[in-house]
Length: 315
Ligand SMILES: [Zn+2]
Image 1 (cartoon, protein in one colour):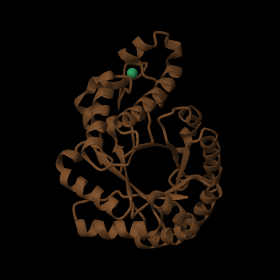
Image 2: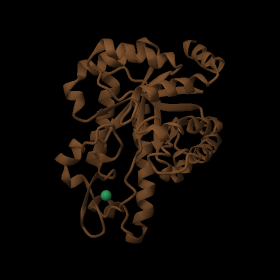
Image 3: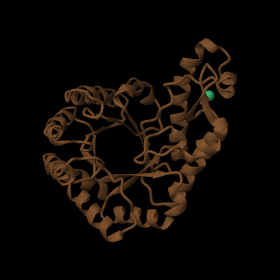
Image 4: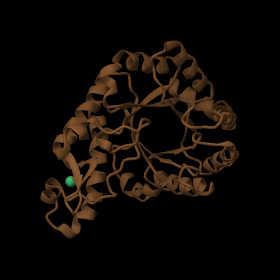
């Protein structure tokens, strides 16, 4: 089982970054997820380049998440998309003519911009994967002129929306593979969106499908981790895709901390290909203790298995 750790911290201080990445590597992790928001690349090019190299130097692959691009994906900073702000005509429009703060993925100009951004990142920085974090866009059926032109039958618009979202994600991953076939593509869904897994799994350009099994954040019983996790793993296996299940080791207080071990056991019972968790991520009552607990849990993953993976990677 591979371990991926999300690192949502600035890369500005090389010594701190080095210490953090060594700690992450010492847990047996093979990858980090780093999220970049639209405006950051312009201000931090040296920091991104150096930080990604530092990760790779200690043996961590770098998966880049497109934070809130077009307000279509999740991101660690709760900020609006610069693109959507500057291109209000790209926004989703509902049946009442009201606009929503999310770019419609059927707009060719939006797609062209997004794919160029991906191309720029892959050609500029040492990146091993692109991660699409909680794609959204199905909560409102879009009646914009582009969608109406592509789907003249108004009664078919909701179904068209879902179909075109799958197409869009497929095209985004295909764009990654066209630039570099060796770069891995991952789509991570919230549990309520797992009904999309069957369709996503048929897309040849997607390597990994994951789920954020945030029982505590979503006010669900911790047993949801095993239930949703197993159903995702079952589908991904059927289609020869990799599965990635995420542990909510953030936003925990003293009582929910106690459920962390249970969530981890549930997650392991689903036998995913990869486990995802966070390095000192937000709003824990006791951040040091949560990271200590997380490290302890990760040690339970058999070393032999991790060693075997490391050997394969070095060949
Ligand atoms: Zn639209």
